[in-house]
Image (cartoon, rainbow, N blue to C red):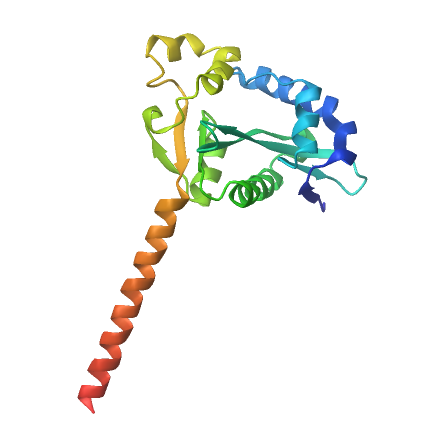
Length: 204
């Protein structure tokens, strides 16, 4: 099965209600819950170009994810990742996750991208993209973000621990650190290459 995965826009508004219904159903099945979103909210993300949608060969809804920004755009989260049940275990979630991650980097190049999740599959996908496990204290302190956890059945655990920990794992991708790591790698590579050339020249 081939999928079309693209940045959602105005033409995709007709899928909004189906997306919201699938998000709610998936949350109930998992038993953990996610912030409930209205079709108007999802449509807004589409109009702003802050969402990714996947369609199958018949142009039917296959998957979706969107971007939320927090703390004056210092942090962003890729939220609402959902895949139509009949396309699960097809690798589609990985494709959507990669696409929304790339869109986040493009729209918010300086922001830290974070995630909190209980899903082992999401943890694995995040790790593949370069996310690192972190404590909740390293994530946004924006009250509006944490208010979204109220729909989760584990919200009382979060409250009892003053938002320091819950059953979710916090993960973070910091582009500034990744850029530094890349710079350090290139610097070390250049030094080693220079040493190799010098050693070779001396041997002659």
